Structure formats: structure tokens, C-alpha cells
Image (cartoon, rainbow, N blue to C red; front, side):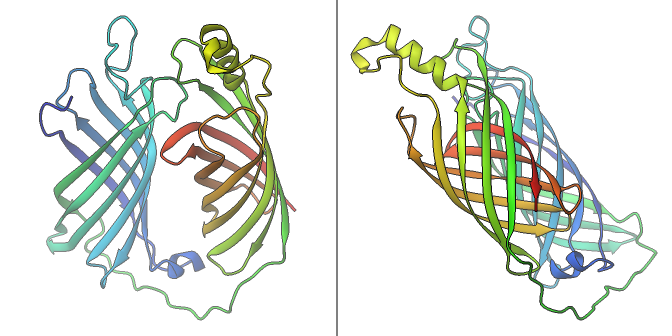
Length: 318
């Protein structure tokens, strides 16, 4: 139960870009940096959160407005504990995956490098079912802040170069993802899972690629859930020998930002012997290209707003 308005602080360090590389000009010379977020929930059951993030600022309206997208890890001071804190069904673990969005009006370098900014922010905390329970929280906040430009006395011009249209031929990708997660039935424990994916992609512009593929899911937490339901709830109709494996097809989009990219995929289970959540699933996350052939990925797989797992992956693109 929320007993009062949460409050906290957001501290960020930004590095400006000026168009030295093509992606900087393409995205209107964004900032990138790190930020720290402290949130006091004003609730002893939920505890407080301390988060560290990597972020980008994307500018609009002649650079008077920016949208910040941050992704990181938060530490919670009072997670769920069956004996000491059984009412906290929002956070099942101390370490949480966290995303925050900030839309701020910004006036830079008003006086001697000092400026102001104000706007709104949305901070999301969840452990993505790495450990149950995990109902998660969202904090919608208003913020007012002070900024200081460490290089206020130096000036640099934004570089504007002509670039030709960009595309690539179809490529094929093979990815192995894995991690641990836990059933929503508390006490079954964390189990490993694996996902094997194969897909084709076509880079249609400098920013965008389209994807189409197939993948198989192997989740031991589903296996333990099936066995538990068969033993504890025979009236559920679960026999205990149902296949816990699944096969899906998906279509996706990849938004490229230098070596980093944002992935969003929409999938459907073709093989779905055990009815867990929905047949439709979603995946969002980040990819980092180590080189032109090898990439690493961190993604969140969910069914609508219900997270299933955080996936850590390694893949090849040929």
C-alpha cells in the first residue's frame, strides 16, 4: 500500500556528440552518459531503490526539449522474504532490472555554465521473474533540476555531412540465449532456461533492420511448475507429463545506434503443449555488436505486461 508520495533524486553525467560519426548526425547529436537514481518509496514494505544506468538524451524543438532513455540495475533495501517481509510481492530480489524515461525542458548555460531543466520521468523496477514474486512497480514523477556544463567556455560546431542511402543484403543470425527464472508458484526455486533462435534480417536503412525467424524454448521452471500442479492440484487437469518445450515464430525490428541497437520482436507459439500465459509473446532489449559477425544481447521476454525472463545471449550474423 502506498502511504505517501515517493520522492528521490536523479543525477546524470552527459557526454555531448557533434557529428564526428554518422550515427551522431543521424540522431540529431544526442548525449550519452550515466545516471544515478534514488527513490524513497515512503513505504517500509517496499523499501528504497538505488539504481545505476546508462542513458541517451535525444533532442527535440531546437534542443530545448530532450527525451532520456536509461537502462540499468537497481538495488532494493527490503525485498520479499517469506518470514521477514511476506507482503512485498513487488520485488522478489534485491537486484532489479530498471528502465527510466525522462522528458525535460532544458535551458543550458544560462549563467557561467549553469542551466535548469524540468519535466516528467517514469521509472520502472522489475526483476523479470528471475526470482518470484515479481509484480514490479512504476513511479511517475515530476522533476526540477540544476545542470552545469563542464566545458561551458569551449565551443564546438555541429558537423553536417552529406550521406548516401544505406542498405545491406539479407543476413542470417543464430543466437543462444539463457538465464534463470522462477515460477510464480513461490518455493519452486530458480531454474535454468535456454532459447535457440535462427532468423534472417534485412537492413533497409541506416537506422532500421527487419527480422523474421523461428526459435525453440527450453524452460526448467515450466517443467517444475507442471510437476507441482499435477501433484498439488489434480483438479487442474495437469497430468505431470506435459511437454514443457515450446516453438515459436517471430517478426522483429532493430533500431541501430552505432554498435548498440534496440530490438523489439513479436512472436507466436506454434508448438504450445502446456498453456503458460498466452501464445503471443514479446521481446525487447539491447544488442551490442562486438564486431560485424559477433554480437551480445540482453533482452526481456514477456507475455503482454507479464515478464517471463531476462535473457542473456550471444549470436553470430553471417
